[in-house]
Length: 79
Image (cartoon, rainbow, N blue to C red; front, side, top):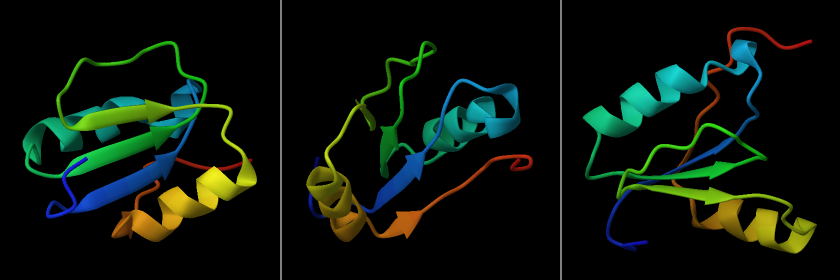
């Protein structure tokens, strides 16, 4: 990750309601922004600006929140 770039964090899953396709569209358009996606995902895109993590400790998750500039939730609904 380039520290000079904006970093967007999202926590998501493969559920349709989580709207992962919208997140990928945003990541393609904002190719100078780094995206950190946390979750156990099956559908991963091979984009240079997208980084995937899963099964993080609380300490590591807190670290990602602190280093991120933006938290993005593109979910259609929760529940």
